[in-house]
Image (cartoon, rainbow over all chains, first blue to last red; front, side, top):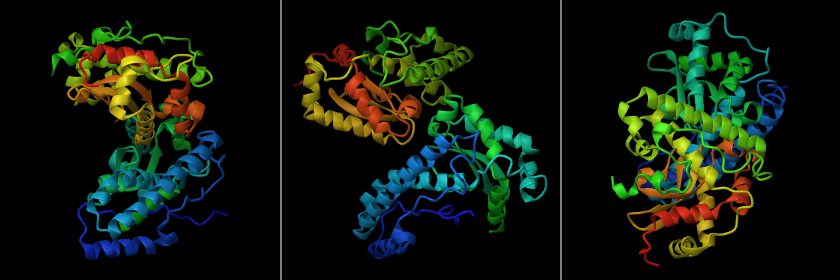
Length: 239
Length: 227
């Protein structure tokens, strides 16, 4: 049985302008009353480390989940503790100073939580042939293959570390292709609701594909969980 | 731009640093297996023949198809004046950065710098240990792909540690590169996986070529720096 899904919708709201004392007290109260005492947790994968082979090896999955994602969670929690202290003290300068670490580690946690959930074993999910996701893909890209081609090209083209995304634009009601650098989270950065993420940090593929990012991006489509992508689209469109 | 700062290429002893018109993949200063076991042959081959080579090839294509003026500029000039042209900057800078990085390592490297550079490090950082703390911190806190540098900030005549992201090179801030370490994941992932700290420590313990760094410093220090 799949373990309960957690953390996929974890989000961190941080204000970067000065907090008046009354607000800083309530921010601290929020942080300490948050789930798990304010601490984020590494979510369990919905499958074994070997489930995504051959697209992604068990070795990569274990490193990626238990090392990289875990570090983001640990460092996010540490940054939030510092934020709590800074907020309680009404120290705007310290709050602002934490932005980089919060975006990086918070984004890392959010992104990877989304990522694990939009992947599944090869053959256990098929590209949609009807329904809202297919309609949205066709409306924006023409057809599924065209969408794959465009998203792949953009994702392969990310300079350095970053992510490729399919996202939902609530303003237009359409889906869009996007990329973000480093661990910048899609929604906070662009306003698009994340539907499908593809990690192209080198750690996501280097063991299996070395420098050949295009082969990895090509292969990852085999292990996308389309039902999850559609579930996210339906939820986003309903708001 | 202060003409004394450019071109760096004229001042590096290695013939591998050249102008953009003849951008070539330079040979490594050592064999692919020379840095084992600290950096494996597999990593060096992939890093040099795939990553570095691609940057050089792409840079050449962009120079060929770009402004005619590009062909008369040095790599450093392109990096300085074409920062807004992301593709051109990234590929020329990464070609330069990797060439520089290979020279920052040698088999049987490590230890500490000597002579004027050693004195200047002690003067500007307090101690070599303090400098290493800053350097390690920079190497470990680059958010994503990047580089950590020891550089010489000419305006203030002092050594600085800086980190850059992606293809960034400190010469665009008027800082002369003295030494660098590549912390893009491709530089260490096959050998160290996520353990970037182990790679950085091993680089400084076993590979760093301080003579190259001393030579770079000597090329730019006027000898009149306050000590």
